[in-house]
Length: 237
Image 1 (cartoon, rainbow, N blue to C red):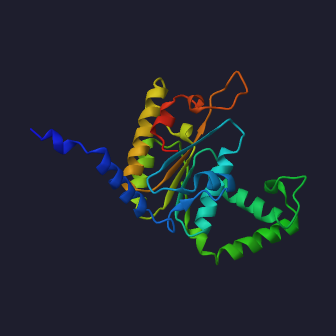
Image 2: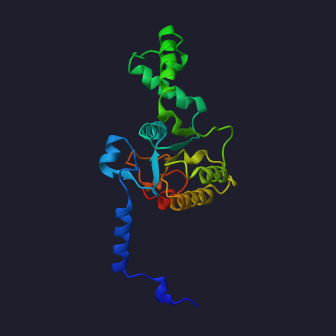
Image 3: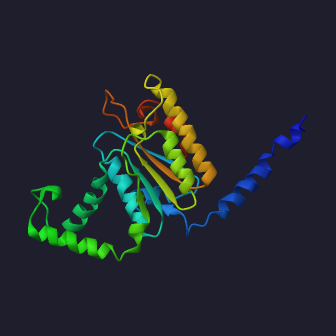
């Protein structure tokens, strides 16, 4: 039988150990949100941090995921993006739309349907310019040919853990669950798996999540995360 004293730690020793671990974090190498208000209030994203971003539909969750992914890649971080809500090409089209609109006003027509020669020339120029940019090799996007299971995502992350600095899953409710009748239980299981992954590989994971429909237009809380409050329970942030 194990000695019970060996299985506990005094709070005094715990404080010292926690401070030692805190000082090990090199703020020169960790990722950031690169979104002003988040960086001001939250600072950096720690290596084993699990972040959940919850918002109503059409409030810009995917836009946040996209910006965090691209901006970190541009700053030398290797990012694995599971853009589960988008068509694959939308990631590229969104970048083109933004880049072109900095030079040419796009007021009346979506870039995807614009066939003007001037826009084609801009696209050709951007593609040629990007070919010389190193950061475009830093961003890997999951080729969503079908709705993935958590087992598939976990397997991919395990194989790529030494390559990536950050994983973004956009978003949680597009993962295929083994049981359609036990969604709450499945969500809790997925969140525990994701948290275990972050603790094991020491790389941050950001998950985007829907909020459930609310009768009142109050500010949302953790309890409003769609399907289960277990989503917030497993998250660090």
